[in-house]
Length: 100
Image 1 (spheres, rainbow, N blue to C red):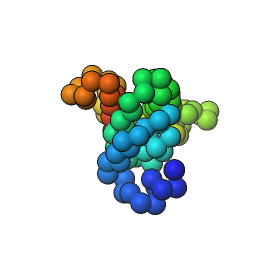
Image 2: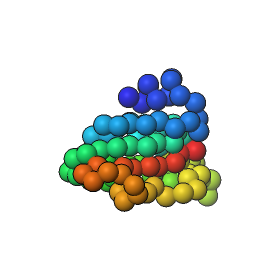
Image 3: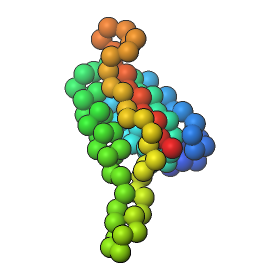
């Protein structure tokens, strides 16, 4: 999935995954700087995806000594992800993360 996200979209574009499942497409979007909108009907899978995306977005930057920070996936994230709520129909769950 990461290859598809990287090859078929440009940085800053938005990818919509209407069957989010465990969030693999969303993780690829965070890693490659794409915006992501995921929709998942099953609350169990939504929770798995939410945890994966939060963990991926929390990567921040690494310090290899000497004080020089090396960015990992998405150090310039301006807005935290929003999970659940919104105007999704009853029984549906939606997630949005903005990568840069």
